[in-house]
Length: 112
Image (tube, helix red, strand yellow):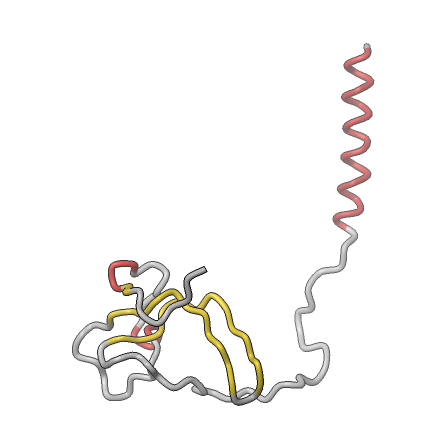
């Protein structure tokens, strides 16, 4: 009987807690208001040597509009030949830099 009461009490507490969790508001599904930021497409300038591209980005810090730090996981070796209209990042060529670990080199990255 004692174990039954404990189990019933635990079940009751779980039911009360799950109701509170379900009542939490979700993420907005559309814009909430105007953005304070101006989007600049293709703002980044490739810094890698020819045949390489940005690695997987793990963080971005905008110190000022003209100084942006990009934390990345090394660089990615690109397949040859590189198309003339290449935009400077591996995803433009259909590469997933997180899965193509055989193409990763540890240049221009942050170690923590």
